[in-house]
Amino acid sequence: MKNKRALLESHGLKCLAIGNHLVGQAVCDLIDERHQSIVPAHVWGDGSPEGVRQRAAQEMKDTARAAAAFGVKTVTGFTGSSVWHATYAFPPTSQAFWDKGFADFGQRWTPILDTFEAHGVQFALEVHPTEIAFDIASAQRAIEAVKGHRRFGFNFDPSHLGYQGVDYVKFLRTFTDRVFNVHMKDVWWGRGDGTVGVFGGHTSFGDPRRFWDFRSLGRGMVDFESIIVALNDIGYAGPLSVEWEDSRMDRVHGATESAAFCKRLDFPAAAGAFDAVFDKDKQARVGG
Image (cartoon, rainbow, N blue to C red; front, side):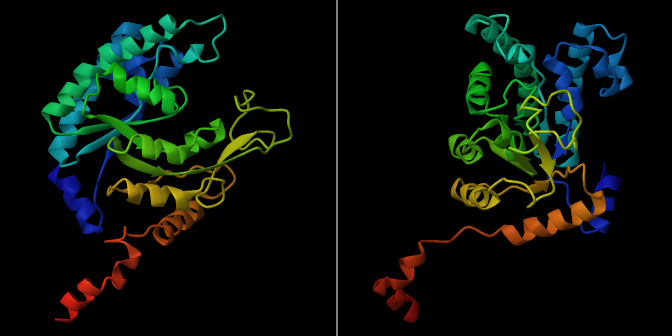
C-alpha cells in the first residue's frame, strides 16, 4: 500500500476513490456465462450462481477494507440486479415482483454496507441501466431497501441518465447528501437513422444507426454548466472524475481534451451573495 501511495505522490497524483464495478455487478445479478469474463477466477469458482454471488459479496467487503487501508473514503461500483431483466414489464410484472428484487438487493447489500460502516468508507453506486437503481425513482427505492443506510450513496454519471429522459440535474438536487462521487462523461441522443431505438437494437457502440452513443466531454448533449452549478449548490466538494468513452476518437486525444474541459468548466462556489458587496455596514467594517 505504501509503495503504491509513494508512486502516485512521486507523479503529483492522489487517489480519491477506488472502483470495483465488475465484482459488485455479480452480487445481485442472475449469473450467466458473461460474468466469468468480468470477475476474478476466485470469485467465479465453479460458476454456481449463488456461489458466485456470495463470493462477490465477500470481495466487496474486502474492497471496503482495502480502501480504508489505502486511505480512501469512497468506493464506486455496481450492485447488479435480479429484476433488471423485467424492466420492460412483459410478461406482466407486478409491483410485488419488483419488491422481491429490491428486497434481495437489501438483503445482500446491507451486510456489505455494514462492513463499509465499520471501516468509515462510503459506497457510491453508479446509477446505470442493469443496476438496481437506474433513474431517480429506482434510486429512491434502493435507498429504502437498505433502510437509508448512511454508507449507501451514488456515483453520479449524467451520461447514463440523459438519453433515458431522466433529469440529471434534478437527480443531484434530489439526493443532495448522497452524491459521493461524480463521473464527468458525455453522451448524445436523438441521433442515428431511425432504425435503432433507445434500447440499442443489439448494435455495438459507434454504429452510426444508434439513437444514442457516448461522446468525449463537451461533444455530447449533457449540460455540464448546470451540473457544476447544482454540485456547488448542494455543497459537493469531491472529485470530478473523467470517465472517457468515445468509439470514434483516439483515446489520448480524448483524455487530453476532456481533462482540459473539466478544468475550464469547474469553478469554486461563491463565499456569499454577489450583492453583499453593497452592504454599507460591511464596507465600514472592512474600511475601519
